[in-house]
Length: 211
Image 1 (cartoon, rainbow, N blue to C red):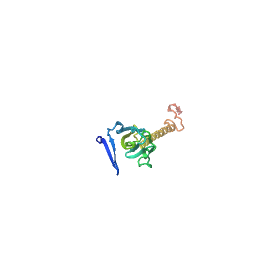
Image 2 (image 1 turned 135 degrees about the vertical axis):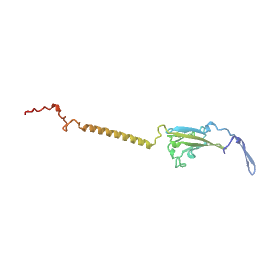
Image 3 (image 1 turned 180 degrees about the vertical axis):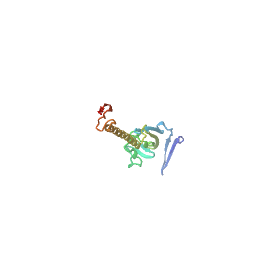
Image 4 (image 1 turned 60 degrees about the vertical axis):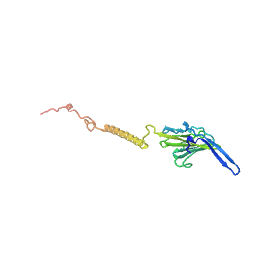
């Protein structure tokens, strides 16, 4: 476990039987980590899809297991593949229901319609099986899901803004109707109750004095 370059060399297994002995030699070479196996950082906006690609050639006997924050998500074993749910696997993967796509040929995992809660560390455990040995590899992905610009308002805040706009519109409409009704019913100050203007004093003929 946790091998380093100084672990390279020949390993010999000696098997002693009652009648004879046998030996088996394993030659181990430890190399540096390739670019395909290093941790990858993925940044996407909410609603987009993100694909986590192992970057290795998968053999039919290889086993691949995906984890999100140490919670089992999906796995490929031989000819079978399975995407986990709360019922099938560990509790905590309900958030990904109907949003995971697993490529059986390459082992890549795609998350659709990403959400902010999808941010975190994803780990892929690869077990390469051979007729005489198996090798385990781990590849990690750091995924960051960012909010779409202008979408940082909560649903409650958006609802409040809509209600406020409707109230302003309704108040303005009532005010316009009230003003119109008042202009139609108001009586000008220079008219009598019957709607006729009072006579001009200059137009009234003077009565002659007969005394």
